[in-house]
Image (cartoon, rainbow, N blue to C red; front, side, top):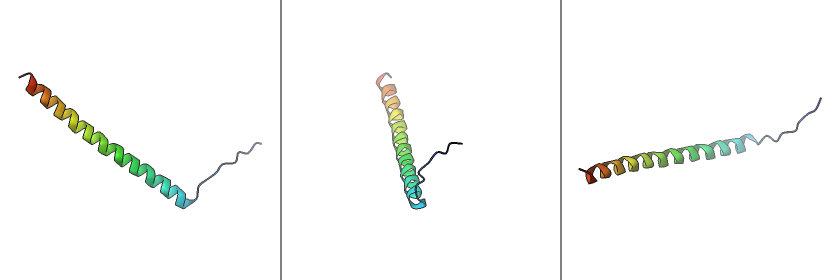
Length: 51
């Protein structure tokens, strides 16, 4: 039987890693929301151009 060694970070480090990824997810969501708003604004401007 072969055994494989694996490094498991401490609980505190796991918390920091989790917090980092949560902050990253929140930042991505914020930028996605901004992008969606800009796309809607672009659509509105294009409609006004061709009226």
